[in-house]
Image 1: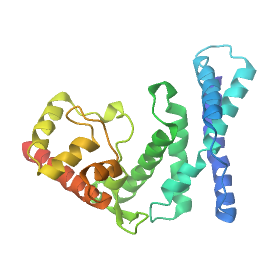
Image 2: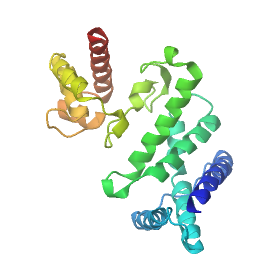
Image 3: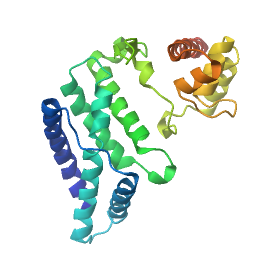
Length: 246
């Protein structure tokens, strides 16, 4: 019963989100973010509802409360969709609807106990959904990590790889196998020293903590844009090495 509500709720959430989009376009306003306390409370209600989802008899109050909590979590995080969609050069209305699906998936799969911030996890899911849209639209053979998709806040060209941040825990199905992992670690050691340092810090290699591009820039005392270029160069070299080894 609860699962039926979720499936129906998915469609309703998309429609409600598009209603908020119209309001956003007209008034440049979206629901304010939830406080940490409210966010935790709504997830507690939602998770309690999920725990009962396999039961044949679920109290109607539990179903209603869980769906209300889910809707609140979606609606009050819509600005993450707007913020992410604005990074891309395509029609924002189209990307908002695509990003909205990513947000809904984020709310439905988020696990507070993991310790990752909802905003970080949701932004990743929204970005991934939009990037999937680009891949579907242009075809895998025409899309690369270096495909231009817009500009950043400083007016610099923004490419797909710029959005593949490593600021949350890796998704299990994205983890490469152990053999490839060892191969890449060896190849990282052969990178030019600055490229190697950037990659090690960005992806938490050699027992270091994962860092944002800005954190790497501050540590190495170079600009964030230079860090971005070094990271792209390093990944390009690693991809080339992987292809040559096949």
